Every structure is written in C-alpha cells, then in structure tokens.
Length: 327
Image 1: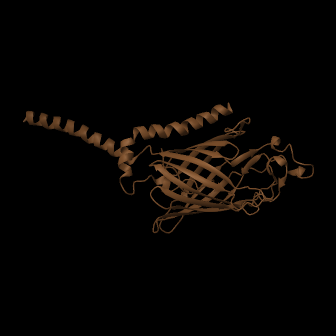
Image 2: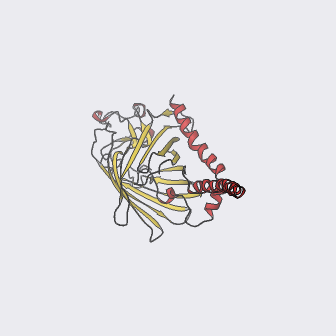
Image 3: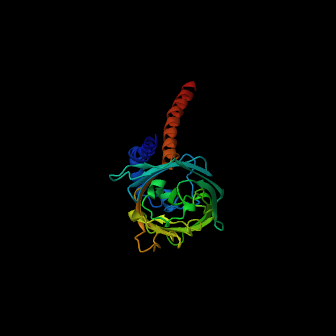
C-alpha cells in the first residue's frame, strides 16, 4: 500500500506538468516573450529549501515537487490552494528507492496546511500559520542502529524514530518581498516540531532569503537554529560511531534555482553546510524539480472572454438582423 501511495503521488507530480505544458504551449510561448509574465510562484516562492514561507497557492492552483536526497531517497509532494488564504497538501517518500538496497517506505504520508492571517503590504510582512508533518533526509528506525558500540548511545534516547531534519510541525512565518533591487524575499519564523521521540521538545527559530538574479535564475538560503535538535546523537555511517553534536551549530542550507519553463524549475541545494561532526563529511546535496499550474490562469480567462465575445457577436448580429427585418 505504501509503495502505491508514493507511485500515485510521483505519477501526478510527473505527468501533470507535461499535460499542462502540452495544453498551454502557445500561451506559455506568448508569456515567455512578455516581460513580467513569469509565474508568481518562482518569484514569491512557497518554500525555500526545507523551510516554509508566507506565500501560498491561490485558490484552485496546484503545485507538485519531486525531491531526490541522500541514500537514494525520493519524496513526492503535492499542494493545492483551497482558497485565497488557505493551502493544503500531502507528501510521501522512501529511502533507497535509487540503489540496490531494500526500499524503506516512510511510516505514513505527511500533511501540510497553511493559512494566511495577514496580507503583505508596503509596511507590513505577510504572516502565515501552518502545520507541516514532513521532515527531510533519511528516516531513522531501530534497524539503523545495529552496529552502535555499547555505551555510545544513551539508552534513554533510543530509538530515534524521526527524520534527520525534523519536520516543522506547528509554525508561524512572516515574509516580506522587496522589488527595488531585483526581487529579494526575507523570511523569519518559529515552530514546534511534533517529532519528540528524542525528548527534545524545545521550540525552534528559522530564517531565510530568496534572491532572483534574473528572469530564470534565483538563489535561496536558509538557517535553522536547531534548538530542538542539538542534543541528538546520530549514527555516523556504517561504523556505528555516534555524532553527539549533530545540529549543534544549526542547519545552514543554500541552493540555486533554474526556471527552464514558465511554470517549472530545478533546484540544486547543499544542506548542513556548518557540519563539523567528528571530521565526517556531513553536508549533503539534493535535487528537486517543482512545477505549478494556475487553474484560473489570466490567459485562460482572456481566452474565455474572447470566445464569449465571439459568441455574443454572433447572436448580436442575429438580433440586429431580426430587428432590421421587423422594421
């Protein structure tokens, strides 16, 4: 059942943008030639790398992504705008999908929901409250600790049934976008994760920025203070050693985005750049493809308006002919 859930999400994420591109090829070609017609969700990003922002999908709009991460893992994520102020989504993935090891599916799908309480204005940040149960990186289970040497893991803190990078859980985030110097977005927030099997229930703080360097290129960076993660020993590879300072400096992630289509972009990111855990190479590289469609696309509405105008002209001409005959 788990693999079918992932395959369904992945299939939607992979085929929907192709269908959208085929059905809107002419519209996208016209959009790409007009300045300022780039999709809003590349400029006002919904998510940095792992962290949320205060941007939401508009009602009826859909976004999907497929993330490739360490140890052959894949994560499919699908989101939809319920209204102008609310967004809902679901995500699911597994470790070792790529490679020759046995696939380990996540225990259950994750959900995320967000509500915008304050709209952005010239003076104020936009503010969003939400819940996101999706963590990132490898999902750690009992079977991931078989080689740990006696005394190296605190028995009161195992098993660590959690993601390497905890989910946000309940969160609040504020965002402000500036257009004076290209397009720069600043984001700051706080959260309380529901992943507490490690007994570390401290709230966390995070911040980040996105900077659009050109029409098709942007860079993103984010930092999580990891207040709820700094006491967690994690296995350091197959040798069974334990890293007691994982996240002690927080998590710094940075990446670059390339929009190769008006509604699709690739993101390459490096995560945990501040890692210095016992000399191990702990930063990781991830790749993500993101797409979004606008169900109420402006051009679609214009096309419908043009069709309506033709329809009205036809019937309007008939009415004029009938009136002339009556006279």
